[in-house]
Image 1 (cartoon, rainbow, N blue to C red):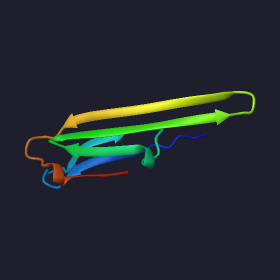
Image 2: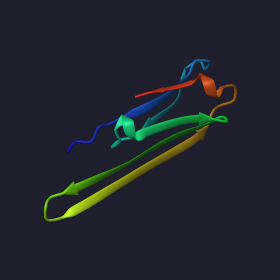
Image 3: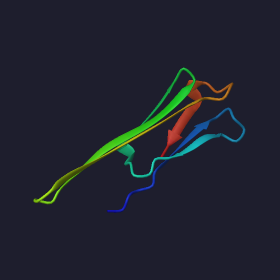
Length: 84
């Protein structure tokens, strides 16, 4: 199967360029991704488990991704938005 390429773009309305980060979370569906902004830190996490049962064999694949970074000075938590 083809994996979808999904990127989360974190932006702030107070910065001149607006963009803080572009994070590639290839292989994850949007419902698998969580973004939290708290105490000046942004955490992007995703996890998924794929099971395949062919009748003869059964395999599982587990993926987990975590990226955390601090917001630049002057950017408040409530000003950060993200999109797929």
